[in-house]
Image (tube, rainbow, N blue to C red):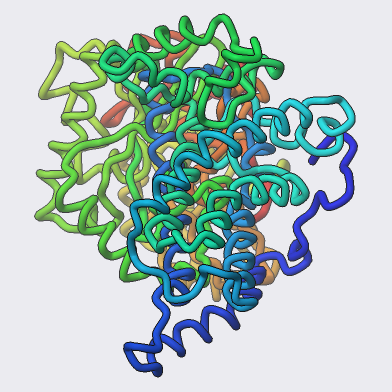
Length: 622
């Protein structure tokens, strides 16, 4: 929002929220119906193509969003180093309003029978040339002066400051303006469209290509990655006056009073508003190489629809905890196609996001595999190969610590990461499964005054660590089955084994610690108000509304985290899984030891280290 919002700031359909697209429904239905029932000689392709073209524009923008986020995470050719926060993501989530607005105007223009809007030919060369010249002349010239006017304090405080709230730009930042500004911009961009219409030189191609050109250049200028090769200007030097670069427009967002031009810098050269550092920034961005992180968190996809919740997916979904959305079900054919491409044709990890904390560069790397792949025994070898390749790649890059997230640290898969240490004992990189911090988080999530807990789920390394620590603290650990009780007795190292007890009285247990492969049907046996504390990688299924459920082990991050603007799976904003935090702590403390296999670090030391660096336990019922 602008600092002093003026009239026509909000979009007219803002009260409709997610249902705003219903305003296009009558035209969309009518155009489709007309195309299907009318004879070939009566059909008007332009009327029918408006809706598909709007959808293609949305896809075009989404491709730019994903590309920009991927390239900025890797770091090569990045222009501005500052991070993006959740506030910017929220402000820019309405980027589709501009496309919706254009769609309404296109349909209205067609319905009122503007000259040159019906039964257009697919191509007319004279119309394409005319649209090109009109854009290079009147449109670019008028935009330059309109833009300078918008930077006058009166208009800037009421309108244009909303756009400049984003100093670090993303492709969709290009269309984040108040409604009144979009009206002015459309009037400018309509000059070539209306002129060719009234002169009878318009064509379907000239309309679609011109609008696509505007979208392409807008996204290019705001992507925060330099993509224009230097040889292009070497081969044709005058091009620098007729085509801007991402670094050129980036300076406008950091300096504010320079580089006002739309897509053609020539007017900044003419009127002396060209930023003197434009060429230097362009050269520096081109020379910038991919960054080498200090800490890598290796994770993987969970469900097929989780691709939309990634930072590289839909920005608005990525900025919120992963929950199923009804409209994603309608995209299952596309989701299935993406799944096949990612899991069958893409055989290596990729950079998901990059965050800075203190002096550490933190990255998350994604293995393009789903939960189901980890459940299949015949896929274990290929999964281990992917994890191994990621570890070796991190070793070459000089990464200090790699934490194994989600199912990448399975006991049956790789013995909690020990498999790689045994195979490559000379590795300098430290592998962390995070078990010690998980135990610490769970212990500190148990309400004070608790004298007994009920342990359920698979007896993993974490389960043994929790049980051992609780028994030492004098808290009884109850299990309902004899075989589990006996196995746990054998693994306990504490002298307080008498605190491990057998109990089949489910209803009397008020605090349950639940892990992997827990029989979730046992929830029905719990009494009202029971607290369920997971120590598993994935949250248990909630079958009771009268009980409390904590999140999977996680911690609230310090405010000094930079560029954190997406949520980790089902966790809320600014909350990070304890497995991921464990790797960061390992690097911050400089612990020169692998936390794999059966190795557990000192629980108290790990917990104190997390608090010392600003992390806080996340124990809010979900």
